Amino acid sequence: MQTELSTRLGVEHAVFGFTPFPAVAAAISRAGGFGVLGAVRYGAGEDLARDLDWMQEHTDGAPYGLDVVMPAKKVEGVTEAQIEAMIPEGHRAFVRDTLAKHGVPELAEGEASGWRITGWLEQVARSQLDVAFDYPVKLLANALGSPPPDVVARAHDHGILVAALAGSARHARHHQEAGLDVIVAQGYEAGGHTGEIASMVLTPEVVRAVDPLPVLAAGGIGSGEQIAAGLALGAQGVWIGSLWLTTEEAELHSAALTRKLLAAGSGDTVRSRALTGKPARQLRTEWTDAWEDPDGPDPLPMPLQGLLVAEAVSRIQKYEVEPLLGTPVGQIVGRMDSVRPVRAVFDDLTRGFERAIDRVNRIAGRA
Image 1 (cartoon, helix red, strand yellow):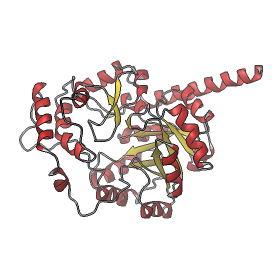
Image 2 (cartoon, one colour):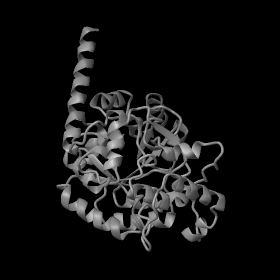
Image 3 (cartoon, one colour):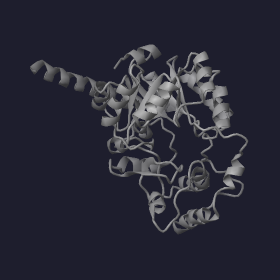
Image 4 (cartoon, one colour):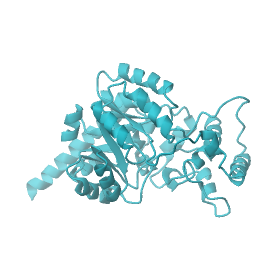
């Protein structure tokens, strides 16, 4: 599974594995893919530096990347506390009532919420980059559009390729005009923030729109056959995220959530604004249903919604309240039916890819 882009980055297989867990990212890189560590759950630097140190020791010299969440629109001089003050009391009451309905216990006195959407703050993302640029990161991806021009220039000065996710050809052309090096065409099927266009339609549209920039196909990819399809559509690799959530190396720290993922089918996800304020595909739960109830309030825009629900999500996760317990995940969750090491998942991907290529070659030979 080698392409011009994978060769340029020095990886054996053009499989880019996005994950919030350093152990998963390192295992993907060791298996011959390209691990990409998501930074959104980190604070302003120290924890990220700790985990990048760990990555350095556990990737066996293989390359890896970093994914940040840096908003396209710059907001200066606004603190997190000031933004939280914008949250209406009615929304806070709705969260309290929903948690009380399901008997979700309070956090212990003095216990801070362990789940915060802080990476959307530009100053936080920039502090993360200050740390990352001290490491041999080979690819910097941004999940919220093109990074600011000075960030792109700084990454290039460090020899780092810059990528961004796109849900339409228009978004992809904007990234190209901003001087980015790689476009991730993220289809409707993907976990997390997604657009409205399915991968089978989106990938060739983006490839055509930004030629000759390399494109990675994302969304609904969880088998070697699907990787082959993405490459056949013109992509130079695939971007896979959800599939790694049920690997042994993943640090979900929740047996209940793992059970829900293993039991879920491809129809058990929903695009909801309940988590961050932007449409994000995730497991459908009684929490997402509550935010879809016409009698309840509409989710707030990003970043207000993420701050509003931060403590609630921490409580749901800590006490494993199964009816409310969920996570961002794509429709490929229907394939995730066992807990296996990253290496075993990766081996299945490569075998499936070989089967697909052999099948196509046989068909072509009979034509």
